[in-house]
Image (cartoon, rainbow over all chains, first blue to last red; front, side, top):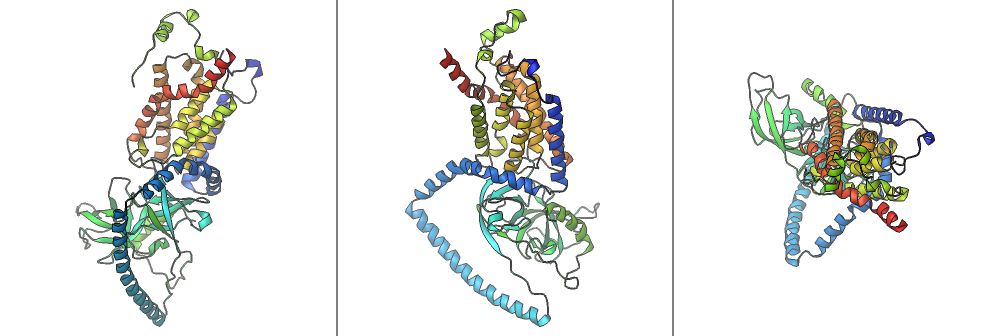
Length: 307
Length: 188
């Protein structure tokens, strides 16, 4: 007899098969609700909070190694880094001043034209903690959450451009779904021409696809794609990707355009989370999206996990 | 996987069932609840430990293996319900859809429990094949479920991970027997 096994007359409770069926059905139900409706956030936050100390403990050796590495960085490297950063700061200071002037001008012009003024959004700097392990999604976890006012649906950027969007928030961490996640959609426009469309993620290792562009449209290899600001997730004008290949196959109604992200989507450590725009525009002020956009946007909303 | 056949297990396979020597593991005192809890927590810690993204897709599933071990050797203490709870925790930790690991671990716990009487008398290489098969079945079922709910798989590593995990089975088994071995020695 196997140790720990009671004699048959002591068996209590439902049979193993009954328990299996119960829990299997329960997990299938959870899977269905979570992938279809995404309204199990409370349960997720609860478990994530309980898990947080363990996660911190598991990360501790990693953090320690990093800190020791910083401690032993030699002086020369630090000095070089310092010089480079000072130069960068100077350059950015100049750009900042220009931006300030332009911003003021813009505000005045908007006031003159009686347009809705653009609200500036609050932003948080976060640090990437780790890649999530799930092989079915491309996500990273960052070190701030509900307690630091990170909200679901916020855009996430690095120094070069957009890397993704916050999809789950727990108390002290948040998960960011990357742009390159399959079927993740980003409303973009071609910077040079202003042509708006939707950029689709195709999964790791595959370039993203710019869809709903007719073969006759003016697109060139090397064109920068920036956020269009439609869909109210991303602020307008952030760099997203550059066009790498265009295949104008005349048999299809749309051109096959592929693009690579400009930001270090899988490599950046320090990131910026920019709040999603909450207020809905008044009907008269809302720009009419072109009909092509609609299919893409309704999908984007589903993907964004915001009500 | 390298089949490693011990001489005594080979003998026990070919001799008749009535002459089969008792597996020495079956004589060990039952595992303690504290030890099971600690090992499951440590397994969770190992799985939560962040590694670079080049290695991440190839990591063996230590929690799944530990669960499988305890479902086989302590079926009264660890079963389908513990598997479900651990699965939910892994879902949150890995950022998966809720229920994905929960389903896999429930299935795993059930499979382990269903076959445990046969598995404990298997020689090591057969146990490893069994573990690989069970983990692979769970992986395929979860893959089909995720495909149905609109996911995309990022690499073939997903189907190789069960084999890597199964290769760790002998090492894990000797580690997890530590408490029982010690108790057995203390009794003598």
